[in-house]
Structures are given as C-alpha cells and as structure tokens.
Length: 319
Image (cartoon, rainbow, N blue to C red; front, side, top):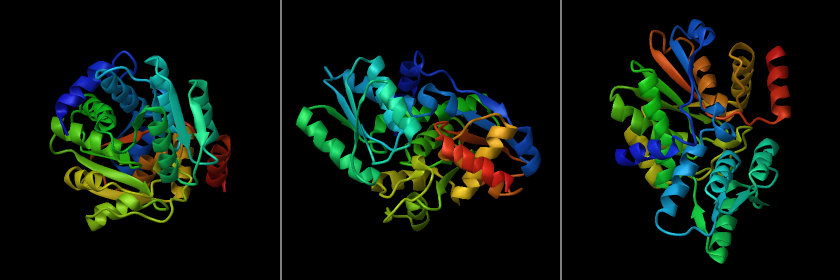
C-alpha cells in the first residue's frame, strides 16, 4: 500500500464525503470497562463507508481518459456507493446483485439511476456476470476487495480515527471483502504504530477468519448470514497476505449477537446499524471486560437494514 494514495484520496473525497462523527458510548464503556467510541460511518452518503472507495476509484480511472461506463457486483452497499459516485461524476453505471438482494440497498441503487441486474445465487456468481457485461460494453469493471483504490478510499477512515482519538488503543472493524480493515489498519498504523486492529467476521461466513488463522487463503462453500455485508465465500491471496501483516486479531460473532448489538445501538445509542454495521459492537460485548482500561473505537459501517431485520432485533432482545 502507498500512503500517498491515502493522502490523495482524502483531498479528492473532501467535497463529497464529510469526516464522519466519533461519539463516546457511556453504556458500552460502563459494561466493558473500556473507553468506547463509535465511528459512525453509517451516517455517510448512501448510509455506509463504501462511498469513500467508490468515488476515489472512479476519479482515478477518469484521470486516464474518458470513462464510458462502470460495472460492478455487490451485495448492496458497494453497489449503492458506486451508483452514487457514478451519478455525481456523470458516468453510466450497471450494478449486478445476487438474487433476492437487501431491498433497502437495492432501492438506494435504483434511486441513483444505475441499471440493476440480479444474477447469481452468491456474490461470486454476480461478479462473473458483471465481468461479462463489462467486456461486452467496454465499460470499466470495479471488483470490490481487489481494486487498490477502493482500499485507499477506505484508508481515509484510519486517518480520521487517529486524528479524532490520538490515544486509541484498539480498533474493531467488520470484515467483508477486507478492503475496509486493510485500509483502516494501514492508515491507522501509519499514524500510530502501536494501535491494535481487530477484525470481526460473521461465524456463518468465516472465510477471512479461517484464512487469518491458517495463514493462507481459505474459501468456504457458503456464506449464509443475515449480514450481507460480511457474506464472503472466496478470499483473495494478496488480501490475506496484507491481513497477516496488518491485523492483530480476528473474532467471530453470530447472527443473534449482531441482532442484539443492533438493538443496543438503536435503543441505547440512537444509532441505526445493519447487521454488518453492528458486528464490531457485537464483538466488543462478547469480549466482556477483556479490553478494560483501553480506549476502543468501534466502526459502525452501515445503516441499510431491512425492516424485518429490525423487527427481529427488537423481538430477540425482548425475548
């Protein structure tokens, strides 16, 4: 990774993506003995952190010549971010989603005017359809988790965390395609070398957890989790190498633990989070008082939750 890209991304993003808020959580602090802060990426454009990478990636591509269109595949938030970026940079966009996508995220993509195609049961299958469409149209293909400029866009979050909480000890980061944690860890450790970065995956989508533990790229047969933002089956070898260099620990959380974390964030913190967006909070709660005495930052990465999942969170917490 190149910190010059992070610096450039911050400059390019400034008109589009404001610095996200960081707020203290008295409830989580009291329960865990840590000094806990929430980094509210769920308040960004399209309700997730993904716009950072999407805007910077399209801007970089446009520096090399005219861009006839952009194609990508996504479970939702990356697609919405790409559609958002494409509309503001006046570029046509086609977004390929797995069949039966998150309806809130699909609606966001439609609102931005992108062409939507539902194809494939899993994200990896949608990616194949997107690549074929890009070849046929001559459009630019963006592969989430593999484009270095997506990671550079996400890395701007790490800079903000160190500036907002200079004495931070630990950052908990949800892990989907891994661009977020790799970028955040790289930039945060560039600014504060001793900070620890902990990744959080869904236990029903453990590919990157297993890859980190086994120190090799591991893929799984399924990713059957309510957290569509964490639903990754296939890992990328280069990404795994970077995780091994940058990430200090990896944790797993269950769907129920994410639902309970969603409930806590909504009721106690007045923060709306989708399951992936609540994963870091779930991991902190699960850890008990393991981080007592430490300053901990939790990334709340997305707010695009379907109503039925909110109802499940409320019902589970009250049962």
